Length: 375
Ligand code: IPM
Ligand code: MG
Image (tube, rainbow, N blue to C red):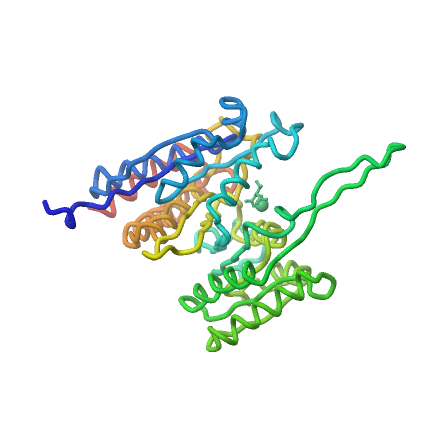
């Protein structure tokens, strides 16, 4: 077959990580196998340790070889990092440092965290059903700047038992503008509304953030609606009336907080996927990392009770954003909805009258639903 008719090679790096990471990623591998077996979509897959697993193996949370593999891949799928075993280590040698380095080296400045309430799960939300039914909002979190990366940082000994800790919140206009653009581009394909969130009432970075977002809006996206909100008010509005939001764009720290909060609106952190994207290259391709919003949940690790859906939905985001396989992504999302509608629940989304199942059994059910859909 001529070269241009050959199926594209899709290079995928999988980093299962720590805690429940490996067990939820395992279910995604089964779905990937299904895609290649039943639909002929081959992925060239490499799997490597990251986080605590990499510390135990190589002494560092992200080895240079793994970073190289990530740079060479079309997309990276990550489970989760961290755990009590590595808690006492200095920041730069902790599991989390591996993830932060990966985000920084791949320049993944835009983190997309959709919070969608699936009808079957409306009762799993801690909010009243009438507040969250059909909720569909997207948080765009700046991911490579702000206080998580700012210098100077550190803990200094002042003597006499006194110490001083410093972190620096810092943003440049181009950092704000590029992530604002991602938010506007997404809004243009959804509800046409962006809410920009900061603390311009007390922080200079907030003032700059607001001015730059306003400028990008006026210059490039005047047809969309832009509003501004202080981060504390946004935290409150998210539980008061979450459906007022379409796309929220905010900095690294506030985005970290608000996305956990938004995730819980959907009933469980176990349901929330994310995509982290870099700038498009000349061919329009972006570096990308996909990971569930939940962490490594060491308390339930290894017990086959974690919810694999957030990681699976992260994979379907990959199919959409990195591989242009929207139909396959739709099919997998639909299979997840079918299974939930049928009453299967992992522990985190369990509610009265539903059937509690394990991680593996949830994977089995999703594969069965895929088989059924495919006929
Ligand atoms: C997240 C996590 C990470 C973060 C940790 C694990 C470093 O909380 O992705 O939200 O703070 O960004
Ligand atoms: Mg977080």
